[in-house]
Length: 264
Image (cartoon, rainbow, N blue to C red; front, side, top):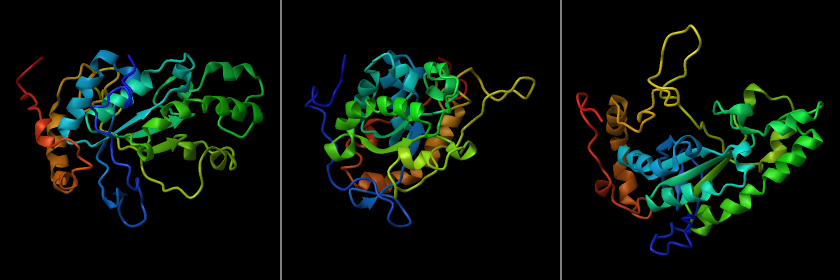
């Protein structure tokens, strides 16, 4: 099922005013001050049947912006799940930051790049090596598929990140100018709420994929979720004041997380 915005006219399209800007000491959206209260849920790590549940819990926590990576090697299979995921986020009133790669890291095989790239014995990944840039240009076919969901067209996508963590790799000074538009603002995209385990080191997480996140791998609330919601609640007043940003009042989406003694 493709839950596109065009197929759901009852879903109010987001404003087509001025998009995300960073022209001063703060972000603005639609010309108004805007706090990016962001969180990440990877659609390719959560069964599709649970997407809405997880995003509702994210919104109820006080998050207003969903970020997700896009694994190139997954979309080699011509799946259209990304559009459905963006549509659900829009229906729930979440803004969207698309982290499209081509390299995403994300503890995903080859950082999301397809393994067939390595068939070329001379391949130089994440550089302007001609065969790599030709492959990246083919991957760009993803962009027209999600273009209708960008803010300027009434969709929830307010920003797109290209590449990821290139500063720790940085083998080709021409590479980043090749794949991104110049003169765009820079921002820190992630602060970790937990960490993964290293063999023989201290145990940090509760499950293989949740990294001690506010929601467990099973989607259960954690103590960290309650603490985070309390912190984010301090920033709600400004956002609710601009009702075009919060299309649905926050109070209608709040759900009480369980206490420490309750279990699922």
